[in-house]
Image (tube, rainbow, N blue to C red; front, side):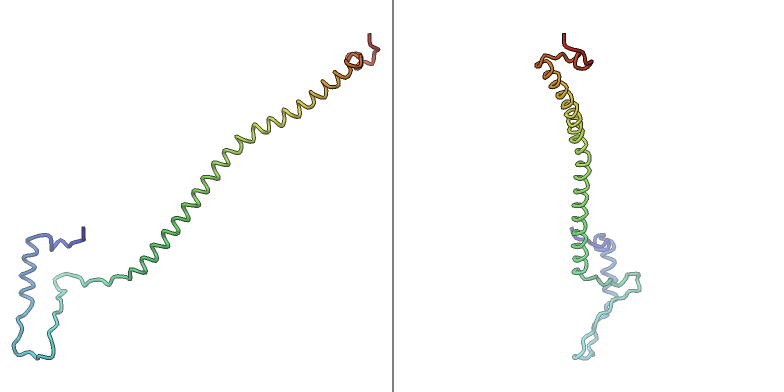
Length: 138
């Protein structure tokens, strides 16, 4: 719906305005010069304001297009920041099990070395208790 001034919508004001216009426009004089035509100059004394010059639409379009480009770039940056935050939260969840596996592996390798040592002593016939104390096997 296009914008319409209230004067053209209200029936009472449009009728009164039509009468005002008729009264303001003088009847053409029969003795006027045929070369020059009369120009109707609007009367702004009744409180009406002259129309404002509208800015060029190309300037507004350019500003709007730049605004959209900046908005898209900001949205892309915000999306990237959200991805980085989620990755920052996800990495500890992945690294904690890996760190615990690494710690368990070092403990397990020590336990395996102890068990291999015990097994080698049992295979050779030396009791691990005696080997530790330095006593001969029984």
